[in-house]
Image (cartoon, rainbow, N blue to C red; front, side):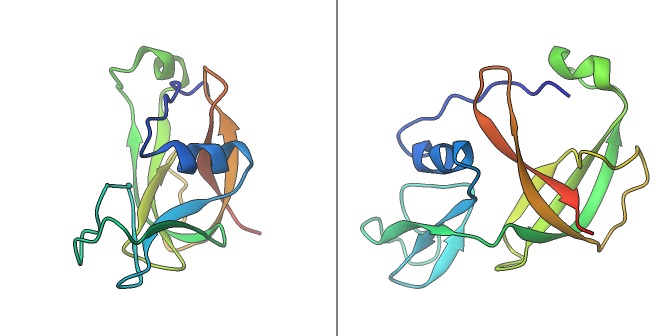
Length: 136
């Protein structure tokens, strides 16, 4: 599935650079030890802007829920319809949720609750993005 290209900005650049190195990092506030995603300029919990870092994650998560997309308005994805769109929760913090097409999982056969592992796939402009596949 060809994915729409991503253009990093100053705030998200470390996330996307790590993805190109096939590493998953999440923004972390060292003042209150809170992970947050998507990244923002200040901590959503304590408001600190001076204590944000990028923390490496294990790349493991669980499938929380999913839907099947039958009619997307995104032209680049229309040839791949229908496709899964799953929500996964990181093992390090279930409050951190990410989306995935679940490459290799047949449409509408998503095992909710199953463990997944991160993989990285290139987009149309070459930027890699994290995707998730069922582990084992």
